[in-house]
Image 1 (spheres, rainbow, N blue to C red):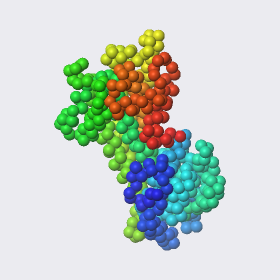
Image 2: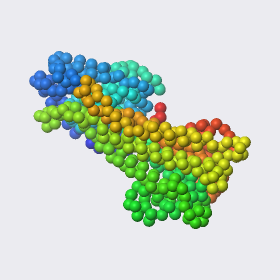
Image 3: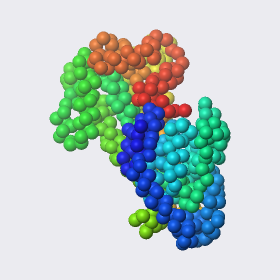
Amino acid sequence: MISLNGSNLTIEGLKRIVFGEERVSICPEAAGRAAKSRAAVEKVVEESRTVYGINTGFGKFSDVKIDREDTKALQRHLIRSHACGLGDPFPRPVSRAMAVLRLNALLKGYSGVRQVVLDRLADMVNLKLDAVIPSQGSLGASGDLAPLAHLALVLIGEGTVWKDGEAVPASAEWQRLGVRPIELEAKEGLALINGTQAMCTLGALNYMEAEALAVQSEWIAGMTMEGLRAITDAFHPAIHEARGYREQSDVAARMLGWLEGSRLTTRQGEERVQDAYSIRCIPQVHGASWQVLGYVKEKLEIEMNAATDNPLIFEDGRTIVSGGNFHGQPIAFAMDFLKIGMAELANISERRIERLVNPQLNEGLPPFLSPEPGLQSGAMILQYAAASLVSENKTLAHPASVDSIPSSANQEDHVSMGTTAARHARDIITNVRRVLAVEAFCARHACAVRGEERMAPRLRAKFDELAGITPPLLEDRIFSTDIGKIEHWLLEEAGLPFRS
């Protein structure tokens, strides 16, 4: 059980909830803070003071005063009208994580929602009532309005949820579970949708995948080095200490750990003086991607515990202030940065693939790793496929955050496009995994040619696992099947089975 209080949720904790199916509870102290801010909202309604989002319209309609008897209808109309997401739905774990993050944000105590709203969000998580949320339609400012509105629909007994891979009415599932949906009161609809939880959720799950891939890219690169009889001297710690980047030094040390005991790698001058950059500069390139991951993780964990509602309620209701914490610029930048950092892991991997298959570069391996060069093509077109994904990543890596488009009659005249950045980052990460799967396939077969009995013990263990997935390259076959199996295995190895 993970107790949520609005301040201490980590990416690791979110992973335990989403993939470990750990239950959540509401910290009593946080519930107390939320109750105080709720009392402030009810006082505003009782006194008929004009406060944005409580008894006014939204966006360009913020100057329209709403009568007290219409405040419930105002929230209901808000959720229904804003639930206009488009495109394919997010994977189910994204919806589950989104509910967790929205609950955690409301528990900071600045949003003015009732305890029943908090309880129902916790019920959605613990009862696995995961909303069907379209993936497109958010501008990433004023919050992720459309995605979060689809989440809020479930709370009021509307919209759809996932059950056995199908979208079913939320009302039927609440009834089956014996739990009543809620009727939103003043400010609660706005509190549910004014936030960055779609981009932040997708960003956090992206990070989990990206971190796992960064780890996997190192042993895959190590296997390639064995297949190419590469030089290990470039990983000498003194080289990396001389530059001063901790992540670079860490990668070099881990590479030496993977390669320890290898009888396939060489020392400088034995076969050649130095290797190509895609081998020699693994610590520098991969290390820089680890720097990106560090930045992204820091920003995500701040945002996961941030108050992103508007207006916010302070000093037990004595101060209610409209601001712009819903603006997703920090996460938009982080996701665009993640796109670049991950795309580079695929870029350098594809160059290593080329070295494994190109007879002019692969140090005596069979041309294209073919069992019968000429009659059989071997891994020739696998390099084409990897190159295609790398090229696609270059388009996807264009920063979404440099774009903005005005909305709500120019009241909301600058937006972050953070959710778009997060979606594109997810696509890049998928492509990176597939490129690394191709490299793993080629490296596994190169090592088989060299003699797997001479491999470093830790890499031999990985070789054996791969050998159970992809049989020896004795004859041309439908290689997409092999790559798909390796891709699936990489996800499973990372403990992230959420591509559905």
